[in-house]
Length: 263
Image (tube, rainbow, N blue to C red; front, side, top):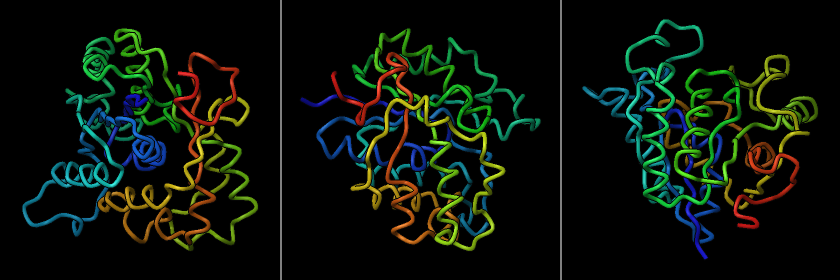
């Protein structure tokens, strides 16, 4: 029996880093996969060389997410229609139309209509601090929780990073990390994601890391080939990204390995 997975993200490329393996695995197992984005990533940092003459960043990022969706087998891509708010503390957080300023019930209503239209069985959002505090990511959590209530979607997973896994990698496999300026620093990553003890769901996506990597590469304006993500050797990439982590909201004490278990 096939189920429907709706993954809700803040910006194009977030789906690649957070849930691409889960999306690809779900599709490979015969499920329907829907990607919903709060914004089109209008304020992402980029090199001018990433754009074609006359092309806007918004146009580029929409094209990139479409390419990523094709790699992952996504059946439908939708946008809620808000603007990228920029990083925490920036003046753009207060811009009209910024997702960080969105009325929670209004935004949740937009997402709930998609959930109802799709008869969604599973919704993924972010943890309560958006992984690392980005205001749009935090609002994905708030809006997603409310949308699930409005739509009656029972199974909601908070996508997160395994904080302890990150620290182990940086402590014990540092020699496998590429020599790039954006390599994470352990001291800066101590509050990223969630502690392993509260993670309910560890999804093995090791068979899909090639698609996850290709999905990242599709977002070349944000994840260039020389970035930390794509410069990693294949084996190191699989160790770093061969699992994806979630917190299941309706069963905080469970430990499981797949989002469609016991549906």
